[in-house]
Amino acid sequence: MKAKLPWLKDRLREIGKTPAALARELKVQPPRVYEMIGGRRAMQPNEIAPTARFLDWELDQLLAALPPDARVLPTEELKRTNSDDIPVLATVRDVPPPSGGNGKTKHLLPVSYDCVLTGETSHYVERLPAFEGRNDISCLYLHSVAMVPWRNPGELIVFEKARPPRESDHVVIWLACQDHRHPVVVRQLVQESRGKLRVRQHNPCREYDIERKLIAEVYRVMGWDDCLR
Image 1: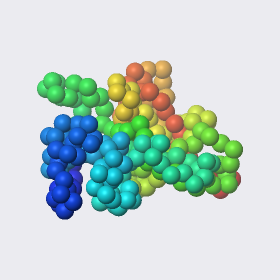
Image 2 (image 1 turned 90 degrees about the vertical axis):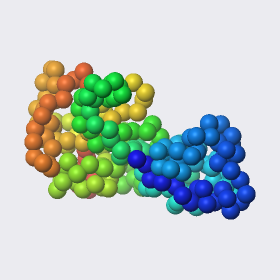
Image 3 (image 1 turned 60 degrees about the horizontal axis):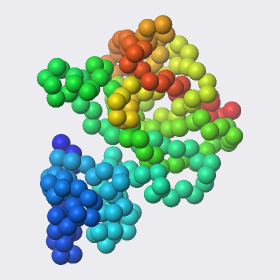
């Protein structure tokens, strides 16, 4: 269940417009707007700016009304103040359970994961002096409690693509997908082998294997020593 948006219905009534009219503006079927109001569908990144214009609101006003994990704009809508800033990759936290063979979740991976990349950039953070001249660094917010106390939910994870991870490093693992929305796992790398990665989570503490065929990319998480060089 997504967050309900009762304010959307109230604002439409206030300006004398209907959910059906908003649906026409967004080029979706009217039920999709009612699903947003009722919390059964999230507002999509490409719908945020058109909805703000339709409601006669500033973009920042609409973003403030949305739940935090829905405040994601398409890259072309972002207002970047510094071309050297580091991108924060947008993720959604609502992770369905692994597939159970009921036919409805057959597209899901048989691996527990923390969040899903939306394919968009949420915003940018200022580049530290130690990162000057590097374009291989990205960030994302951790949603899971699986790595407490190493990292808490809501903390920013900084990772690099240039340097491969070694055993005992923490890693960001992009799992394979079919629709360009990669599920993400953040864990500690225990051991690498040809057919699998053994990883550790901290809360609750346990180790398990992820088969290589389920993995798209593995990136090394950067620590304070990397940032202070």
